[in-house]
Image: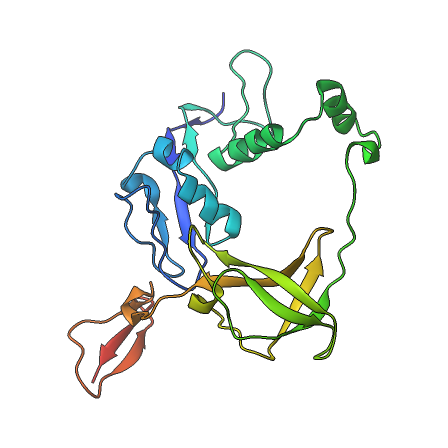
Length: 243
């Protein structure tokens, strides 16, 4: 008989962006500092995380990352993957469940076609391929309002195109003129055509007028005074103000 494993419940979230992130539709969650990893279940429930459109949006855009919900009942150690017989079962994290659910929600393949995919057959007839070529382009304007910037393809005097940009964690009313990096007239960018429109390869971040050093997870500032500087503490792994 294997070792008995105690129940485990965890959902860790990491902020990959350059600014603190707030999940607005889960107000009990604190702002997640830059590069900080939190145990979300210390503040909210797995059900709220699973049903949060804002959280899903941050995950899809890469602003946040998470291994998903980990929940196990007390059980013996599993050997490899078990399932299909009494007392044996598969373990899926919540993120795996989301990926599987989203796949079947967004696809219209039949059960017969799904079987073709699972038995190793050629599945070229079930989808199509797009070969993307990356081009250099040059902005024809400073960062505009909205998410589309005018640019010229391949050279300063090249064909004029409209380039669609994406802001990480963007929810509503975000514009390039309030995002970072802040593009300017003449700046080079890299673009590709997906068959419908030109897209920028740069992932922009939401901007904030002020970013406090204390928002960084590895910085700890208290009662700052003029002339102080930051000194790294190897024991705590944090930068602290000192005179």
